[in-house]
Image (cartoon, one colour):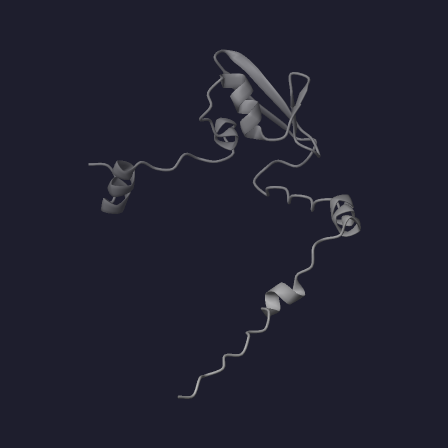
Length: 118
């Protein structure tokens, strides 16, 4: 009876190619700055001012290169400003400042599809 010889499988190509990162490579990667986020085209230009009234108080927010300034403090987003003003966690900054319109309700969308109000 003949026995079948089995050849050892070579080490996987993936294992052969992967080498542990050297501290030098990791350090170079850490020194590379993260790419800058693109500014939302729906936001006003830097230097612009957003105003609105909330609970009988006039709110003024200055748009800066890095974010927004409200009441002497810097914020990275309009939502952070709206949260500070309202205290509501589920608030949209662009919607709070009127930069976007609220989505229509399903009933309003159905009425519009039928040709208007009844």
